[in-house]
Length: 337
Image (tube, rainbow, N blue to C red; front, side, top):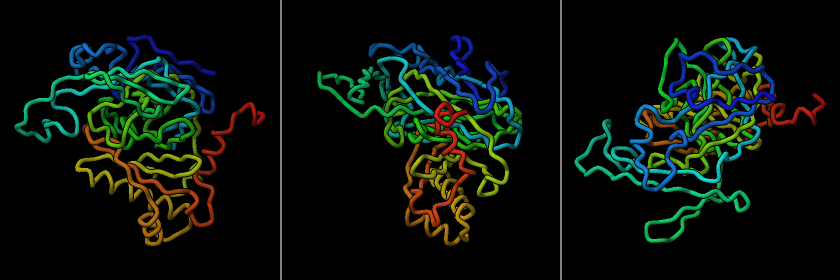
């Protein structure tokens, strides 16, 4: 087991352009500690988010992690084995000029700015809930559903992007499917891939409308694989894909929202067509009639949309991506490795 628990000064606030903080072999189990998006500095309802975590010092990431054996152009599979809250509390906020119902630089209005608000949520692992109090003394309860808002690799062409950005390299996707048991597929743009992980969420509704999830520090166990070119099902893996036991999912990012949706739909249509041996027209019809479309975020520099299809609807129940997800989800000890 490779354990990566960064010191405070080691966290990254950009994706790309940084030397690795750790090196791990492809296929090895890796345990990663990630901080919350406020670097653990927001601990009270009286704290001021913009003071303790001023832009751009938000959304710290653990990475980059160099993966030995990955080459530029390879498709990397990242399987999230297990995610556990590292603390018994999380935090959510509302901030001026941020959130789907606030005026922003890109969509300004003449409404007064929203005041800053902070909620501290307590984690109840036994009940699988997180809880917080309201200003008038009542309690709010939502399900505990840990996932990573941000998983990605170094961008192409030597770009350096802020940790708030989602794109083809992954990044700040904010899709709740990136929890335990999910496998993310993403194209490596550099040798070693340079994997980044962070933005742990204990709960988040689709859209992340107020601008934050229930943000929390996380301890995550993951393992990786590299796919052989003849196992890609679908030519280019030019946008992130996710596979779970029950679904295949593609993700698009962009503004306006319909552009993100088009990216995700096109990617899923091509994946299904090649994986099942269908024409793109027939695949488009199947996706159109059987898919579920969800908004990941409606607040980041680019919006994200996921489009998923149940595996049970795939003609012939094909083995996708060379069976990588099934291999990675099997514990090496149980598999005799």
